[in-house]
Amino acid sequence: MGIEILPPGLVLQIAAGEVVERPASILKELLENSLDAGARSVTVELEQGGIRRIRVRDDGCGLAPDELPLAILPHATSKIHTAGDLAAIQSLGFRGEALASIGAVADLRIASRTRDADVGAEIRVGPETPLAKPVVHPAGTTVEVRDLFSRLPARRRFLRAPRTEYQHCLEVFRLLAVGHATVAFQLIHESKRILDLPAAPGLEGQADRLEVLFGPDAIRTMRYLSGEHLGLRLSGWFVEPRLATEQASPEIWLVNGRAVQDRLLRHAVRSGYEDVLYGNHRPRYVGFLELDAHAVDVNVHPRKLEVRFRDAQAVHQSVSRLVRSAWRGGAAQETGDGPGRTSVPEGPAILPGSEGSRMTRWKSAGPPDSPRAMEFLHSAAVPPPLAPCPPLGWALVQLAGIYIVSQTVEGLVVVDFHAAHERILYEQLKQALTSPPLALQRLLTPVPLDLGLAEVEQLTACRALMEPLGYDFDVVGPRTILLRGHPALLETPVAVSLLERLSEEPEIGIREPLEQCVLSLVADMGCHGAVQAGRRLTVEEMNALLRTLEKTPSGDVCNHGRPTWSRINLHELDLRFKRGH
Image 1 (tube, rainbow, N blue to C red):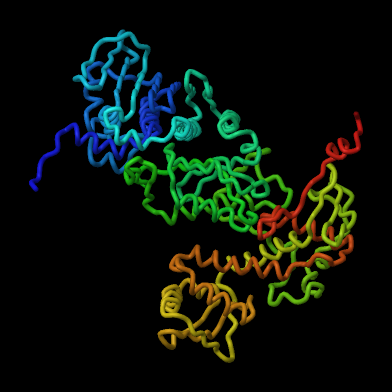
Image 2: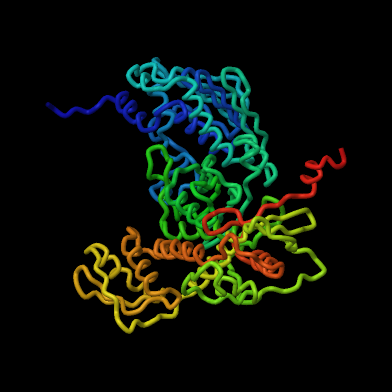
């Protein structure tokens, strides 16, 4: 079997296999070209989900007649010129292979006119040799693709039903429309206008566009966040933890305007929502990340769906921190500039100080009615002043041994006091753990721990990370360590259990998973130490709990993500009692 040079046509068809997977792949490339051309208005027309026809019309800068024949050649582009340009790509497209690949698997027509020209030009790529000819055309470009894979029946058989292909095209359209709100978009399918999105400058316009694209329920549950950290600019719409559900859509990241599917960013968001989401509830968001073009490599995926960050750990920590900071306000507190908006400050999140809260460090949970469980209530109990009314109001009564009912200016607030106390204890423990070095308790009799080879090796490798947490141990054998000291915050059995869990953490080599593992156990400790349902509280104790909850970070939810309070406003009560009707 001899080696042969493949003919150019076959080379293009092979290359098209990476670029053109289905109609949505073509639509993505054409829309990105329109946006790179500076279009302020883009119209998309589809037939049979894009299988029969895709037409994209824009009002961008256009192409000169002598540029049209070059535009359809492989690896011809105006967006990069040297190898150095690849290190800081600013445009959505850059490889110069899209139009050539599309022309290899479908009939392609391009018509265009620059803004300073009197007449445009048109070129067709099909079975015949492409020739450019003059044509009357408005400023901008129209690209039409017909009969996808008509010359490759084997590839065409892999396409799904037109309805399925249309859904994929719609998803591409939504992603780019969300990422470029200042551009007007229209979507027409089978001669029916599906979406008509005017240019949407400003936050209100962006919110309106999101409501149209994802439905009113999605945007009503979201809050706009913005902040900067380590040179990264983060903004976007993120679901409020109390309103999250098991539905994950939308879950969108745009990095420097490019829609990407990035596991690191998804994980960073999950970390930001850690301990404020309930059960299997998932965050919904449309996030925008802006950073220096030199700090991100967009040329790592054939269809440009993934990126690689120069400092992935810094990006992860910054995004996680910025998202987490948004939910650090006390219960029922307004944390932003108005409804639905939050500005995340630069710098570390501020935890509640010792003023107004004199809780002791946890050492053992004790029985539910032990004095320790109620210590902070007695120390913080103060008679309610005459005015003003605080966010969670003044306690009226305890209901069913579980809930505190309080009165506010707007109506009634019902508080689950066990969930509320969980969050209070949890935040106090977190504050102690995140302010290393922790006090170390020396053991009179060291405790031997028999572990696996891999576990001992992991603990040895991360000794420097564990010392600030108050751990002191020696390796006395390939499978054994000797625990000589542990955080004074914990009792010995709990400290041993935590150490064993840390030894099994697969990513213990970096600090964040180590802290996450610690906080996971701390969350359980806070639950066991909280006031249990059924405990009778005095009015002073109830008011003390409400005041402390109002100052506790993430006080709207417990450390398992359950809501700590719910409001019933006067308007709702009037409706129930038919007052004013």
